Amino acid sequence: MLLYLNKATWAGEGAEALAEQVRAAREARLPIVMAHENDAVRGGCIFAHFFEVTPRDLIADGLYHDLAVGCHAGPHRQVSIALLAQALGATKQTAQSRVRRVTALARTTQPRGSSSKMEPCRSSGEDEESAAPHAQMSQIV
Image (cartoon, rainbow, N blue to C red; front, side, top):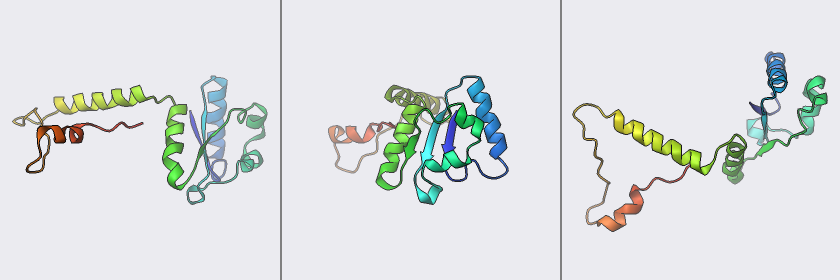
């Protein structure tokens, strides 16, 4: 379970339903990965806020014993998201595997009459060797 923590997490009409979902996940011993928003534009707040607004039984049951992954703003956002993805189980291998599956799927869904062979895009005068890096996919994670 991913629990996104910002200043609105335990507020409003959905707060009790969220608490019930978290209780059920904890009872089922499902892993809970917490993402703590630090970007004020996205409702970020200090972590101490959650000890004021989280249902007491969840705090007493140890919800916050594990560290939350901090989600920071600006140039640190991409690193924050990568760390969150790792906490959720993403690996370099799973990202590469997903790219291979998508590529295979794209090949099997070619419209009738279209070529299944793709030619690399080249500028005029560009030779085969200099075109190779442009044909490679960049890694996701």
